[in-house]
Structure formats: C-alpha cells, structure tokens
Image (cartoon, one colour):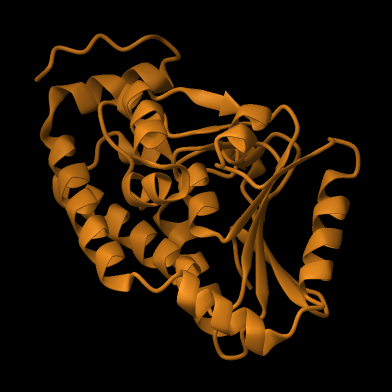
Length: 256
C-alpha cells in the first residue's frame, strides 16, 4: 500500500517503519505525504503508535539532502510545512507515541523522535540536529520541540554547534528516555510498548491532552521556524553546505 513505509498492527499498538534503508531512511516529500496518509487512516481508530527505521544503521538519518540541494525557497517552505504538519499531528496524537531509535537519528530523524512522547534508543547510536553544518536550520519542528524537551541552554548548544551526541549523553540530558542494548533491541523496546498498552486508554488520553496542551505556542513556533528555514534557501551558504555534504567534504562558508 505504501512505497516508503511499513505499517504493522499489533494488539495494542501500530508500528510505522520508515522503509528506505538504501537512503538511511531519509525523509523527502513523498515519505512525509505517506506518513500523513497513515496518520489520517490510523486516526479513525487511534492506537499507540511506534515509529522506527528499517535496517540496522538508521532510524532516520535526516532529510534527503540530494533532493533539497537545488530547492527554491518556495519549495523549501513546502517541504518544511509538510514535515511540520506530520510531526505536529504526531505530537497531538490522542494516545502515546514512541520512537524506537534503532540507528542514526539526525536532522529530520531527531525531529521525528522529538515529536513522539517517549524515545527509546539503541546503545551507541548518535542523535542530533546538524542542519547548521548545511547552512540551514531545523525545519520540521526541531527549534521548538528540542527546547521544550531538553531546555533552552542544551537546545541552543546542539542546534548552534550541529553536533550529534551518543545515546548515553542523550539520556543524561533528557533527550531520550531509555538506552537499550543492541542485542534484541527492537523486541525489548516493543515489549515496553506492550506494557504501556496495558494502561487504560481513557487515562492515557487524558494525560496526553493535559501534557501536550500548548497548541497555540506550538503553532507560532513552527510558523517562525518555517519562514526562516525557507529564507535560508536564498543563501550561497546553503548551496555550499549541501554540496559539501554530498561531496563528503567540509563546507567553506562565505556568510552570504
């Protein structure tokens, strides 16, 4: 049914797997549109949602830089808006959402994880928002959600430096909830989701509604992020940053 996703239902939860392992499960407009379709369909009878990535290397290694490199500001804004719509829907989902982070969670992958209520990560995995090294900023909600999850000081550190941190440090600063061993990682993570599913749906719904109730603040934060994200696609530094990434070299920014 879906080209880039796998959707598998269990008794108490639904697993949505980003299925582009050759591209390290990178997000592009097609993937985001499919995610939106899944959320619309699942919203008819909501369950706990689990997001993960296909393969062993990546949860989601980021947005698809090759697809982004030549984007106009209008196209960049469209991409940002698509990501924000999907991730805001996940944030507002009436029941718990869980990111089972089985590998790299960078850029859009970190933002997908941040949109979820709980984050379980495989030991040794790196997570972060490296967009600044490409001459842009996070565009799928990272500037808002990262600050909300780990606080302003640490969020500024990760976004301004672009560094990716390992799983243990991510747990220490509250970016993830748990670090699990590599062996049987997904099965153990899914077992924990099954335990979560033993809680009453009505209580889970009420808790989510209260805990995620700042919808107007979210909206204004995302709009500001989307505008600035798109404006950066007019700069020479964005062109250089993405070219350098694809050519596997360090960028030479000119501040233009």
